[in-house]
Length: 116
Picture 1 (cartoon, rainbow, N blue to C red):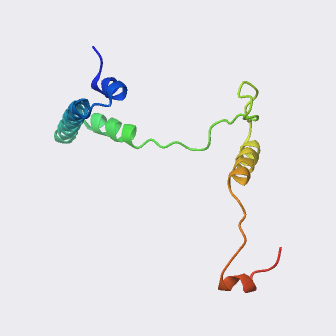
Picture 2: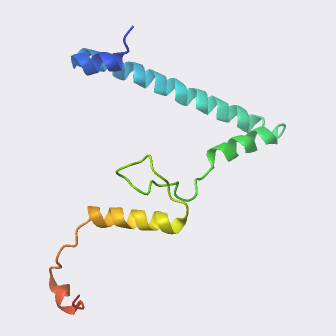
Picture 3: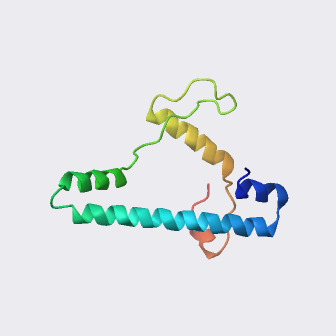
């Protein structure tokens, strides 16, 4: 059986899109209800089982730190990766230099800026 999403992609039928949207919205609604019920149960049992609520809070408050490893050669990703922060900074600097352009300055402030 083909999923409504795949079926819509192949047929572009608006009726199939409506079916997909209905199914997606039902799943999202049920998921949100289950999450809400789980959180209510945790809140009600907080006094008797503080470990459960703190475990849940900890799972929701994890943050990622730093930038992961980058490939030294973007043309050949099978090569080596960066080993330290300086290499990462250099790779990102080169990337952003290639993407952004240095446009000439316009406006009234141009006269007050030092010449390059």
